[in-house]
Each structure stands twice: as structure tokens, then as C-alpha cells.
Image (cartoon, rainbow, N blue to C red; front, side, top):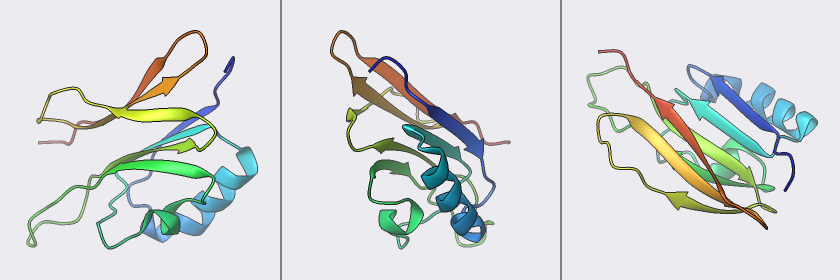
Length: 117
């Protein structure tokens, strides 16, 4: 693993942009995709978000019914990459970290969203 193509975007709601998102990720062959403010929830399957060539690590925001649905993050990694979740303790942030294992070294990639207060 000499070069990893990484893509990041704050999408501000992915459900209404899924077709464009899926087309863009398929056309650009990103190795890792980091998304903030996905606004996804547990009833949306990973396979509805991104194609099966990716493993996806999600953290959907669980909000109160009276609040507007917002937040949520994920990291999607090509399946040929050897990845595993990595945790960093901080409950004040929406965050996901993964370890990408390489032949000579590992790298840690994080996706962090700091919601406005």
C-alpha cells in the first residue's frame, strides 16, 4: 500500500443524494471514503449506502424524536484493504477511527464531526 486515495465530504444528509454519491464513488475508485453529517439511521442498510466492494464503519446519531435528524458519520474502505476499528475515548465528539494494516506499517484514519452547540 504505497498510495491510498481518500475522499472526505460533509454531505448534510446522504439519503437524498445517494444516487449521485454511489455514482461518484464507483467512478472515482476511492480506497477510503469519509462522510460526516450522513443523517443515516439503523433501518438503512450498508448495502443501500455504498456498493459491496467496501466495508463500512458507521456511527449513526441517535437523536430524540423532537429533534431534527442530523449528524452521523462513516468510513467506507475497499475490501482489499485490511482494516479494523480502532477506538479513541471521547464521548463528546462523533468519531470513528480505523486502522489500515500495511506490509511495513499501519495507518490510522479518523472521521470526526464536531456538532454545533
